[in-house]
Length: 150
Image 1 (cartoon, rainbow, N blue to C red):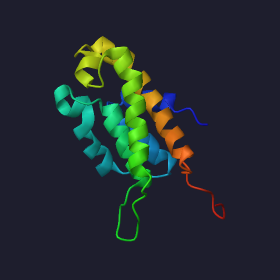
Image 2: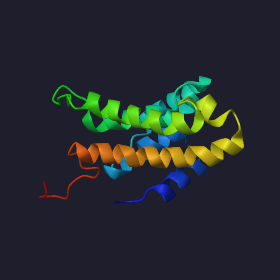
Image 3: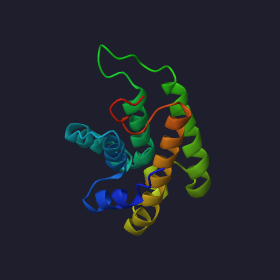
Image 4: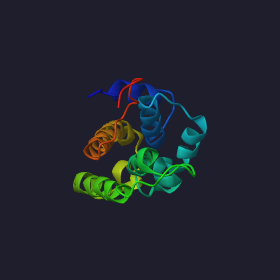
């Protein structure tokens, strides 16, 4: 399994936030890029700019949707997506409510830049790991298969 920690650190140093980093790493796994999507993910940063639900969680939900959601007339919605989202949210709540008393950005980092630097990278990396686990458990490949593969 590929470790994305260094890439996530690079992206954070370039000024990208939690939800954007999760989307960028997922797109890179697929051999894609999409600056419009990454820009749109800005709406989830800092708990939707009001300290609400952590952007790592909301961004990770979007990443699951990137794999299992419907994106065109020709695609079908994967009925497993709701369960995948519930698994992620249940895990995130159990993991971070216990540590920080909440899954809200404002409670996790308390507007403290030091706490943001300390906690956010770990939360983003762990959340991406959980997303990969959920996808693999549901038979999704993170990367495109080589030509001729299945």
